[in-house]
Image 1 (spheres, rainbow, N blue to C red):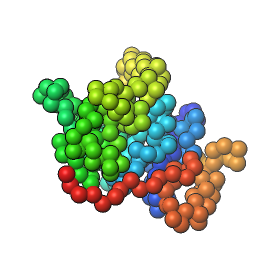
Image 2 (cartoon, rainbow, N blue to C red; image 1 turned 135 degrees about the vertical axis):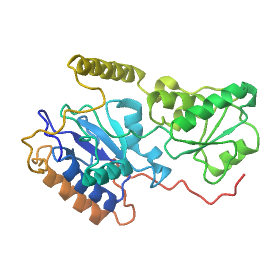
Image 3 (cartoon, rainbow, N blue to C red; image 1 turned 90 degrees about the vertical axis):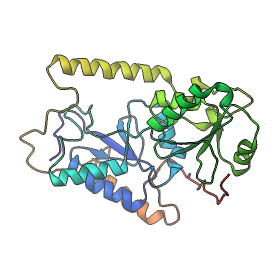
Image 4 (cartoon, one colour; image 1 turned 180 degrees about the horizontal axis):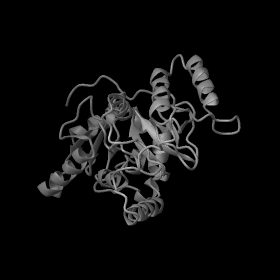
Length: 302
């Protein structure tokens, strides 16, 4: 049974889900978060972005994801499969609590890691020393990525500070993004993969445009707010990782219905139906203009 919110409903959007996945998400949300609202657009009051990195690494190119990573630290990025896993445990009666608490702030779901499922190749970092290589390896693997010192058709990005060598030239030929090492560290700090274009290697030892890649002032302000919220919860005697549980008066599963002005479920369902009819070739739901050309091309392992 989903929580009953005192304030406005939690607003949720998704990116690059196929039509059938988005339909499934809406049905699941109806069960586990009946007071929430699903919208196809990334608006200022959206607080959750659902992604599907298991479906394709193209999620990195999603304009919704890129915008959230750069400007919206207040939006929690959660994987589609994580929501489905929670739903399964919800059905089994084994969940630790509702996935969104009454305040709409805390989530009992794991957030998507910055390098989730990415194959990150590194090249020519030996001059930095073994400790540096181990540091970058730890950063990548802790962030959910796959660290490798080879380049293959599965590589999503090449990390190097030297524009020379076979791997560098082949990555250029294959169109694989080539970034400086600080992309890894800055993305880990932001808890989201930052845009490759801000860290494109321009020359030996070049650094990325950190100030342009993310609004760090927003990130710092949001982190401060979260710490203050946490301290307030503790001061009220609330445990930091658990919610207050559902309201006893919430006896029925209700879906928040959006009126035509802004937020109603009927319009969401209508949008979903129109989308299904109009997306014969590109069955993705980014809803922020046409995008998403597949980056995959058959390549030989190097």
